[in-house]
Length: 471
Image (cartoon, rainbow, N blue to C red):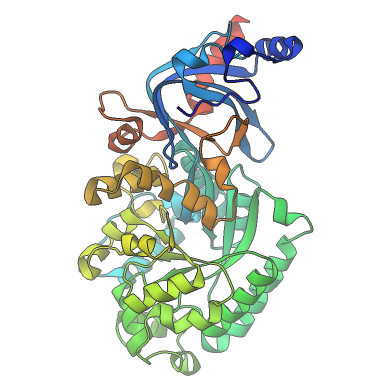
């Protein structure tokens, strides 16, 4: 059993903890004893009927949880910090670590779920979204703050967000989430150099000494091979490598992207021409038979890449992804929303994992979510889709939304699992999943439940306020 007792000896008959330390822990009102139906993570830690001794801490920017002890309830009862402490009972709940979201568009959150017309296609959908943004005219700051709140409501503590404007990136950086805000850059043909110059100026103005240690950092995203030239990919990759940062990009998302890149024809080509983006110089890059990944692979070598979607990948594309050491940020609900699994066939995320490619899940924007899940932005819902549809094991599914996401974002993976040693642990977050009426081991119950992953501090807020009032 994975009993976590901090520096406390596991042999209770030989408790060598100093008496003043034991009294200090017992008198500390910020320490909470929680009883739950179970706990699990991506490393194989799983117990039913657990107790956890925690201290919830919140810094001005980023919340975290000090996990003092977690383990079977009967054994944890003898822990010095648990003795004499009134427990908080969560009889139907499973504890899991904080979640990651490897690909999101928080600045679209205000648009809410919207239908997709498969007959009209992806390009028409883009036009509709641009029109909706203009009509609503919601301030970017409000949209991003709403996205942050919905992410927290879904148990997400770390994110790879695509920031369409510097303001969006700044709001994200000042918020409670950790991870990376990727400042989006477009530019084809004659516009590429000037667009990159403006983006570079913004990036440099947002970076300061010590940023490498900040909970949330700012990097860059060349939007996609059909909207950012190879020169932009080159420049972005060089900048990111210099700053030891990954870049993000949309790769191999739609059939229209494949057609335009390989053949220089189709609805994407016509759309870019109508917008005046695809000038004669821009079009020279395309139409040479390459896949989107092949089209820009040389530009990003030597740089960590988070490739969003990759809804279709040839064997050679998978070879390239493996050689690059890239992360694929797969967004299952977005892929299903756009019918990409019908157009391309099943996503090859399992083939990617078998090749050693890091795969993490993303939510994309809230636009592609079912209305009944619009109260949160949570990759747990995407993981549940893979578990139900593909039979992905609960432990594998948890990995895609915790440690794999942390790896993609350059975060400490140990903050997203329960430690199997006796050391205290500082977790990026601790979530509660109400699995009332769901049978199975803790991880299976998490994947088969329909309730969100809720931060422990949110779940306990009313109880803690009541306790404070009594005192």
